[in-house]
Length: 402
Image (cartoon, rainbow, N blue to C red; front, side, top):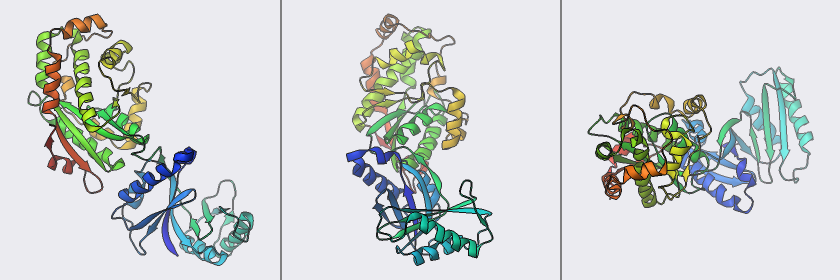
């Protein structure tokens, strides 16, 4: 009997002729995520992937690592045995040894019809076996425990406890995007949602050091350290924005400053995104949540960026976003007190519906091209890796953007 993890996918099965590409990526992501966890190899079988485990390995962190891989519907630790009834019976008794369960069900499936018994006959035979060895009863509708048996041409897979996976698509199949990471609650959730749709994410954080403390940069590093587990390597661009804000304050009327800030951020982020080969920008904006996120002000930002701007949270309210942030592990980091560029030089009464003419007159007082060049030239990139990386790895890999 060989210890294994059986991994099933859902959405990938709908990809038709492109399915092999998605499965290769999923298998590669699983191999990278589980490195050092006692996995000998990752195999692709019809309708599933199988991770062969080292015999006697402790599998430390294995389940948590697998849960971080997008593209998985569910997975379970079990046993691979020869495709014979006696071997399957032995595996079932081995998996159930030491367990107590008031009811159970056997679910057997013949993926190929070469096995001499029908699925129903196998289920009955195994049910009789379990009843003979354990004080329990059969319950086909709401069992306390379900034994799954998958009968394949060359082996049988037997497992008990199915764990839900994160769903989505394997990171890397949908291209690269650049996510504006503020350090607040919303933007990490937006980045996570794009990872779940198969995107590799570059992160761009605007800070106002030395005008403000560097707490926002530390938070950005911590957030990337949390999210990098889904894509194994990520880059965080730290863009100095304080001096740019100071020039905006000197030339732009107070109500329009926030929109002008956002437009400059969009231009700078686009330049960095193109340098990184990203195909779109990502923001955590939610319609109407703050003054800069009205339809009119969102339009003013969109019109200066030629790459698509993806806003995956646009229709969500704050409570929905908070629930998702808690679920993905970024909420506690995001609510730590800090000083980011959004708190510097912010007017008391920002314009909520800036018109194109208003913004054109305001930006005419600035050398927009020079300010964008300052932001891009001052950007510093830090690299994060997982497993074994995280926020600490990023600080060690700092390099000028140029």
